[in-house]
Image (tube, rainbow, N blue to C red; front, top):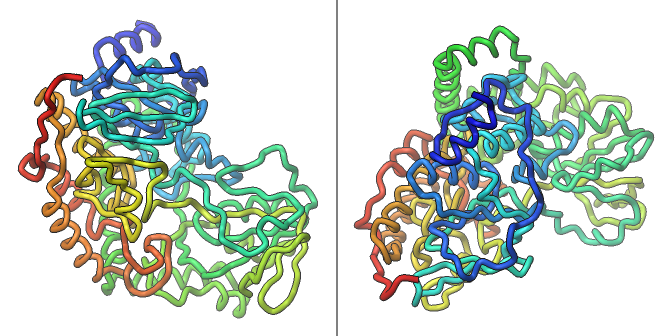
Length: 529
């Protein structure tokens, strides 16, 4: 049977079988257009916002559960989410490939232990091809508002393309790493040179011989800096806080291993299980202050000492906060890059940006041809990416103004039939995000099946249930390293942690295992939409 026939059969049956031993070689065909301007006359069972990992995974599992009346709204002209946007030099995942992939869609052909962004994006495209999702994806549909039509029991979704979509349920799968964030630095608009954000990389710009300033020392920066040092005339890295950096055990996958994984899938599954439990054990160092935390700190300092010989530079790169309080980074080439002749670490605070570059607090003006902002994303710890209007006209952004809260990270009281992927307090600090994502998808599918089987029912989390859930979460979070005093993107300005889950991935899975109907109030809709 040809691959095309297999895909056609999968499309008809909702099959989730993989169709290739090497699924990352073919990209999905993305038409870049939606197939009609308005959908006012059609009611979907589920509208999925976003065609990244979460959106595509949700569609696959919904179809397996018999829900085929779905639409995926993608704001861009191509699938991929954060891996479509983050294609900067050196972009890669800091979780092993065999764990940073769906358990139900293994890829035996990963080229190395930690795959690069292009290979991960190819894997995302393979999901579209292998599971027949292309007919359900509508491109260039940038959502501008979600509003609940209580009388009809439907969510109405508006997009910037002028389209209107209606659905009995909505899965927000745009993810927390969707909108690039520029720092709030005085004079940002004054700089006359080239400005590039890590999530909006300009591949047409030549760095050869250029003077480049890099703002940020987070997960993107430590991948970008080594690549820039190879190309640019000079690179200055502006550091506010040194990160904890650990070695990265990255190796090329042998042809023998690929063949073994393809022929005997249980061998790759065993590798995945081993990686999962290895990362689970890291929670003891990352989440709570324990003897394992001290051991991890000693490892980090030893790694720094072996890679950086200059005592003063080593002192500048030594964190003064607890391991785990901020995101732990992995890199083998960041420290060596900082010691190259054309690279300099600047630890003076930035006073402002001027026409020719950056002025630091001691009064020195550093001149550049290009500024690279490796400053991450606007993670919605409060507010929402677009207006979401629920029961009685309530607005979610207003309710989340001082910190986002939800029930089991996925549902919010007052917004029935709305499921949020990577919602409040779902962030992993030690394990693969996709492990958590699969649990969220499974929970959403159970909820949506309950809604559809109940005919005209809206399911809304009881406010007291949500309140009790969050009181327990915040009590547990108060004892974690994330809440131990340092400033990080995990916390709001007033120190509220709306981002991380305070426990093991196994605990999160247990939380999401059962869809407890008693936690919801059921609102009967008078008539079918």
